[in-house]
Image (cartoon, rainbow, N blue to C red; front, side, top):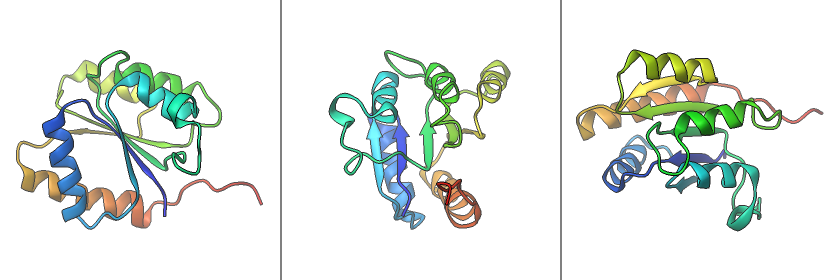
Length: 145
């Protein structure tokens, strides 16, 4: 089962997102980091994230834009500059509806841009859509045979 990475610094949003994924029956392993630098370290497999058996590369990253240390856009640009990370699905999940943020995210290589819904029930519905589209029907790149 493919791993998911959630990059979120707000404890309330993190709690709600974990509950929504569980309610949507998303059973994939979920790793959480709380700032942009931790996201880069995780994806680069350095520091505390060196052990790829414990911290495997994710198939999908939920990425907030407003993060401490490095912004979500900086993380996304860094990911897309790396050949080994270019095919990881990145879903920007943020509170910003600003057109410049949306355009910047897609220009940087986001696969999807979603605005955090106002209620937990709406987030559960969104999580069910994640599961359905990205985890059940989407096909991920596989290693060459």
